[in-house]
Length: 292
Image 1 (cartoon, rainbow, N blue to C red):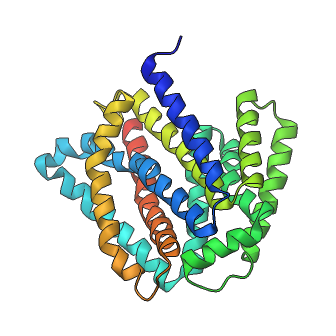
Image 2: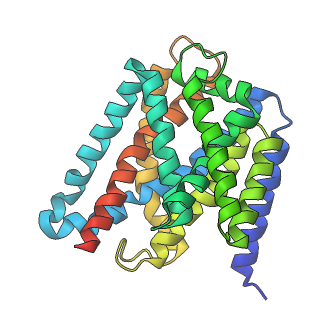
Image 3: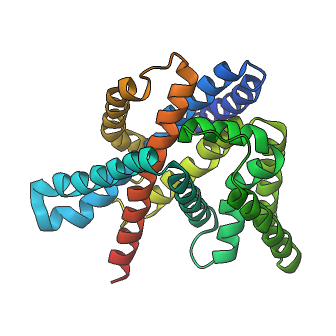
């Protein structure tokens, strides 16, 4: 019989899923606000554990100065990504999507499975382009702040290539039933729900918890983070700083616009992309350091 804490967590997760699905029936602005709030509160904290990953790498060498050595280049790279959205939005969008595929795939498939990583990591990026291209274009037209009546040709072409690769992979390999089941559920979500709602379900229901569980199970990558409760507590300080940074940027991003949902969409997705790049870089540095 499940422990009371586990049962409570599952119940909360089920309520969250049903709540997100129900929010898809709200007007677009309200639906976006619900999805983005969930992404911020439940999705962003998994990246806020990067400090716990950096500490054992930097503290032995830099002592108390380790946090500055970690934070300055981390935030500097994030700032460059935010500037790239202003100067080259389409190229930045392409880079963000490509990095997201690799990042999601590595987390979902694990090491040593490059094709499976492309298949699984590409699902939340390619499926919206295939099943709801107009809605997806509308979202990223706002994020990139440029007209986009339809998706760029390179995104659509990449999505069809992903579909061909996925079909070939499923037909030529004996895939694990759990993996196939997960892909079927995600496909149903992206077909039935608006793109932002479906992505939120994937991001907070699969990607973020997987990342946190991987840290909990790894005794070397983030020593001391050996339970989900400790992982959540450890993420709170940097998560709070992230919220303060977003609040500080809000007047800049919201200038001249009274559409709160669109403004929140822009700042959330642009900041996610800006934080994802150093987040992935730190993961690779930690992996190489451990292999030495």
